[in-house]
Amino acid sequence: SIQLSYRGPTRRLRLCGMTFGSVFVLLWRVSNARAPRAIWDAWSVSDRNELPTGTVTLVFTDIEGSTALLERLGDAYGDLLALHHATLREIWTSHRGIEVKTDGDAFFVAFAAATDAVAAAQAGQKALATAAWPEGVELRVRMGMHTCEPRVRDDDYWGSDVHYAARVASAANGGQVLLSSTTASIVPDAPLT
Image (cartoon, rainbow, N blue to C red; front, side):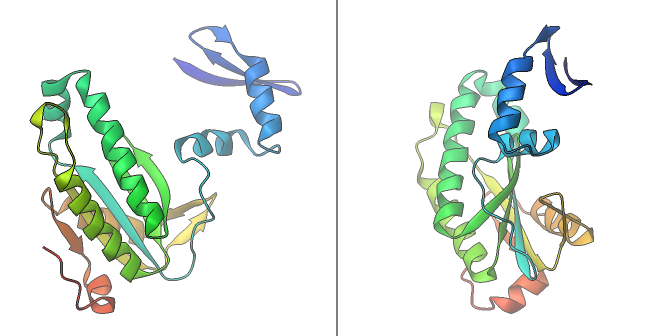
């Protein structure tokens, strides 16, 4: 089990009963004394830029049938997940997307422009369809997006618009990109499949 314990002026990380206080203090100093939660959040998304504010397009993705794939592939699923992450991260970056969070096989990405989000989703689906997956797997990823003005707190989006964007993605089938009606009205000529 992992737990953070705070004692006096130093912070200590306890991992399986072992103390790694000096590592945590070093990270604390390197991070310019950001709050401990921010350090952990920064590990999940490396070197990200500031989140876009105002009207943004939120994109959620998820691998279809990931639990079955994990059971089928065993340790090889780690290779599949690494290739999935690398492929989509390259796409997000090249289309000016900011990775908000990654949870297992799911991405949450923000774009300042709906056109960039749609182009990234199209490029992502194309790249995923043509990638060489381990053990001949056909990887299918569902994607969905919603354009809105989400609230921002602690370097994260929150509010009903975020939940709505996630629901749009969950309604997609693997290989599909779904747009909310708001996003579709902004990018009416998007040639999605």
